[in-house]
Image (tube, rainbow, N blue to C red):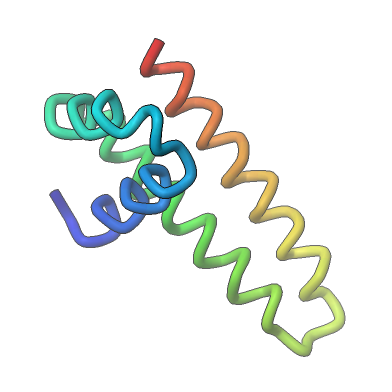
Length: 81
């Protein structure tokens, strides 16, 4: 598992402690879940970057990346069911 995949998974484990076992199991067995964890980490990092940015477009970009992270999170949770 790549570092960014692990970080994305860790974020999800913190957000959904009641689903930790399912998340860990699927991430260990399913490459597509690991790819989604990687994408989730990238979106979360981008949202944080733009939230700190002093650029005029910062808030808008941060919102866009938060929405993307939310959509990826939903995909991951849907795949657990």
